[in-house]
Image 1 (tube, rainbow, N blue to C red):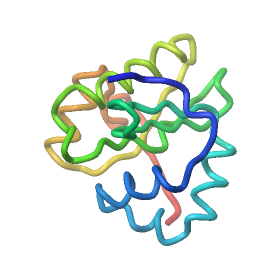
Image 2: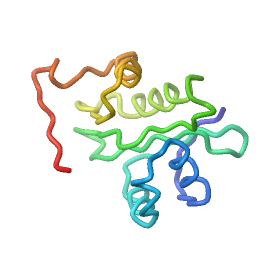
Image 3: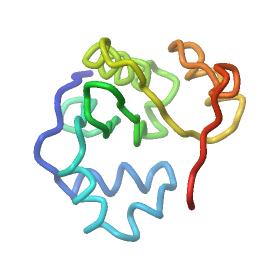
Image 4: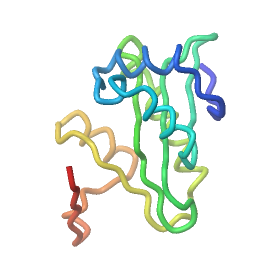
Length: 133
């Protein structure tokens, strides 16, 4: 597996990856997803050969705050360390940033994963997150 910066958006490989994890809110509006990629602070991709198998996308100013917008791994490659390697690469890149945040599903699986990387639930830090949906 090779992790590298994802600089040139390629709909032909990105949309199938998002579909594979059921993120149809993104695939229903591919033009918006492409703009999101283009305006991201950083995108890193995991490849197995020439196949895109995982992706992490970060937004923010890169100095005081970074938000992990997307982390996805093709189901065939989940639980093989791909997501961990992608996240560790982002965390290393932004190791001096005060706040690295994310919003994710509230499931035991995602909780265990992000806590294994050192993330803490906002309520355990005396914070509260809000979202306008």
